[in-house]
Amino acid sequence: MLLDNYAGMGYNKNSIRERREYPMSELIQKLKTTQNLTDSELKHLLETDAYDAELRLAADEVRRIHYGTDVYIRGLIEFTNYCKNDCFYCGIRRSNRCAERYRLTKEEVLECCEEGYALGFRTFVLQGGEDPYFTDERICEIVSEIRNTYPDCAITLSVGEKPYESYVSYYNAGANRYLLRHETATAEHYSRLHPSELTFENRRRCLFDLKKIGFQVGAGFMVGSPFQTTENIIADLRFLQDLQPDMIGIGPFLSHKDTPFCAFPNGELSLVLRLLGILRLMFPKVLLPATTALGTMHPQGRELGLQTGANVVMPNLSPLSVRKKYMLYDNKISTGDESAQSVASLTMSARSAGYEIVTDRGDAKTREK
Ligand code: 5AD
Image (tube, rainbow, N blue to C red; front, top):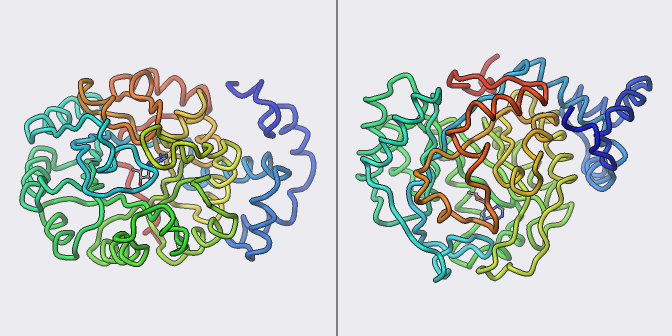
């Protein structure tokens, strides 16, 4: 019902109803039944809006087969915005002198978990910049304490590229999941988004190491990042087919005023939604978040995402005092439904889009037979 007036993108209720009377196009049928397309078919699908309405219907159908109407929630704790990296797109890059830096103490992180647990969260995501203050020892200390206090919860880390041994120590301390977007799977494109000390090769190494160790792994990329081509996106899809992650996080590139990419245009909502639909059909059981960036770019972005195959939302559990400081891009939403404190209103907006927030751990079904 939210989408009655969402014309121009195939989201109009009537146009969907009309289309339903026609057989599904061969292209979407093929993607749905074989979970694959050729490169040239993908290129065609990515570059037209002609299939958007039926893609949404097919993605929603597949999502309902595996996950019903369930939407999993993860409490996001952004525990440090110090970062030693200098990614050209990111608002917390080390060269951004305007960023006001902060770190949460272990006690503060645990308070976030306590509040989150009371609100129904059973997954905590500890995300931060690559902050040398948080040595493996400090990270493991925080993880162990959360593990001991909340044995029924999943602990997700998102702290960037580390050596194999560091990942092993996090896993042994009790972390179960790790998020590390690959950002782009084309080495040449990777080098246009990052300084030369960061390589796609190491990013890839990290993701495969994490999988090998036993983490449930999340990868993903920005849609509409500077210099991105359709071929780059196809390479991202192929990389994901190779990696077989448990979660895929995508959202629009959104420019940040104090970065080298300040003048580049934002990614497009329609392409993010088209990709969510494609990902749901290519990876039927994957966890697919309706990301904060998607919610930032359109007031109903998250609901639209949920209606196009997404089945996870990650509200912010960080203390209000620091929330505005974790500014990866301009205008990042940090209150309202985005905040973990509004689980009730999140429940209502998910419900109005046809889904139900659930509070179990929501492990990926990617590993089930
Ligand atoms: N726009 C959109 N997403 C961004 N990220 C970082 N900077 C931006 C930006 N300007 C994403 C990256 C990173 C995740 C934590 O946030 O993909 O992996």
